[in-house]
Image 1 (cartoon, each protein chain N blue to C red):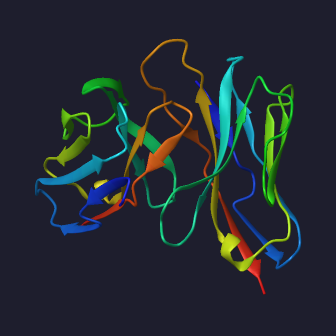
Image 2 (image 1 turned 180 degrees about the vertical axis):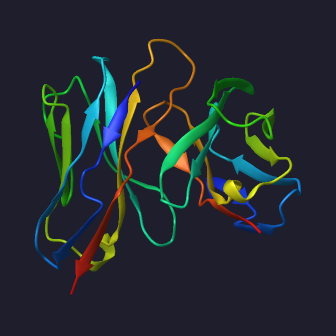
Length: 118
Length: 111
């Protein structure tokens, strides 16, 4: 069974600074996806960034980037130029790659509560 | 237009009651899911349906019964509600497995 671990229950950062959220996972699969989801106080689950395991290049989305270390099973999220609107819970998640039609499940970490201070 | 809509957004009820949460998606997706977020914010899958067929059924009590009348709808019925069922329930849908669209959640409070 896959597990996802986020070792930082809470973090804070000053506005405009950079912060890195940690995530490690355990799997015997070779093909999979990794995700970071953001959940602001509004409760909506928002996909921040996605990484395919077969891609060596780290995914980036504007101010958000990941450091994907497949051998170490590590998938950290870096937020640059932090903004007040980045205040939220951040969840790291894992999903196996399907080999045929059907569906797969997201396995989530316990989340990191990020607060951006003015 | 809301892509994945859940009703109601809030549900307060007494122990022992039966309640339903409805979910509809207008994205034309084949797969729909129910996830539960507990009081500690931990998210875990409950069910998934693909083309109205149950694909994933995690270790969920029999009191929880999903129903998919068509591809666009996946409802969750809960019998004999217990205090521990209090949580936020998220519906989601996807066309491809790696891109889920979540609804805004239903906060269930059992008193």
